[in-house]
Amino acid sequence: MSFTINKLLNLPEFAGCTIVAGKKGVNRVIRCVDTMEIPNLETWIQPGELLLTTGYSLIGHPNQLMLLLKAMCKNISAGLAIKTRFIGPLPQEVLVYAEQNDFPIIQVPDAVPFIPLITAIGNCIADEQNAALALSLDMSKQLSAIQNSDNFFQDVAQILNHYFGHPVIIADLMLDIYASYPENTELPQAVFETETLTQRMHSKSNILFYCPADGKDDNFLIHLIRVQNIIAGYIIIFLENQTQYAISDGDSIIINYAANTLSIHFSQDDLLNSDIEKRNSSFYSDLIHNVFTGRESEAARLAAQRKWPTPPFYLISVALADAPPRHNSDSRNLYRQIVWSVKSILSKSGMNYSIILRDKSIRCLTSNIDYEKLLETLTAIRKHIKDEYDWNTIITISDVIYSFNELSSTEEDIVSLLRIARSKNLNIIFSRDYLLNIALLDFSTNRHCKAFTADILGKLEQYDADNRTNLLHVLQVLTENRGVQTQTAKALFVHRNTLLYQIRKIESLTNLNLSVGEDLFAAQLALKIRELSQID
Image (cartoon, rainbow, N blue to C red; front, side):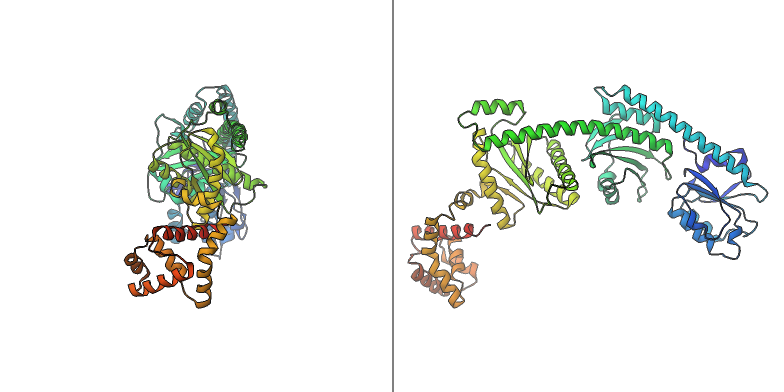
């Protein structure tokens, strides 16, 4: 349908014209036509423009033709139609540059007037625009007819395939395929592996055209589907074996119309999900504030209505480290897009889950599944958020929960676990690996714990400060090695006699006998409480 250079050359008015360079660019679309005979032609060039010129303004300026050509290539012009009576044969460097950039240069016979050429081009452009308007009306009718279809996405893919004549895929943000036509059309690996394509698919552009640089046969016409400025999915059209393609007005109208219609459906899903998330958050708030204490059956009934997983399950927190405030629209949109990404990855993993949104974090209840699979999924979530949004996350995972009424205490554990993860610079942390830390964290600021720690370690800390020694560290390593002196000496890189002297000094300052198990445990406990008391 598009009015291209190739169609131009088949018009009777252009019968005597010859394409002398850039023949591979004959599929370039002509959007407008102009004729100019003024200096510095390159400053007036427009995208999609076919420029007709006699070259008169180029006489005596041999470099101007190359400047004009480079400007037209940069501005994605359609082509250059030129007479050579005034400037003589076209320079070889101009022909080579046009050939390298697939930019059509058409030589017009000197005797052919421009007026009939311009008239013919104008008529063809007008015909194309009229046809595009007719297509838009037809597209509107077709899309209106399938609004309530059970196979809406598949029907849209089929309509686009009928128009473009190429395979079509409708995918979500994570490139999971919603629909395709012909059915079973798959995305090639190049879509996932080509960095430049990935960057463009996450840009603010509405329409993307991509031609792989590695010579693969498949090129793609890609349109973003957005919901309130959030990228929700893509229309991907395969342009097999086409080295050149430019989007015509008709193409733009059709794909824009389809994308807007799909956006409405994605938006409806998003509104539904937002309502579900609000109800989930409210119910979760009641659970962690013990509203359902002693009413486990009622909590289970309400959870089932919300399609929550049934116990046993995990509580997972995805905390956005250094996240900006969510009061501005850009931050809210980014937060929503991250939530969308998390949902997509969880769904792809096959996990049964429910999302609860908290301030700067995402809570997730998920069925008790294989540890390795859970770790793999959470690692993928963290990597995706970092790669796509440049946000660091801390993911904490509770111990197995066996009832809804356990969520109150588990929420407290998750908060404690987050503090521990930050203090240890951990990205993914399982509660079961830090149960003692969680148990002691809240008690570390208790006055009895403080007194216990000061009684054992106070004199030791003061001695180290006054004498620039490291006896506290020696005690730490000794407890980590369960009091085994040979292993401790090896870990500290000191002679055993040196270690014995240090132990005797520690015992004199702490009134402990470190060869006795109970005293060694007391020292270890005091060190652990001291460590936890320093966590913010």
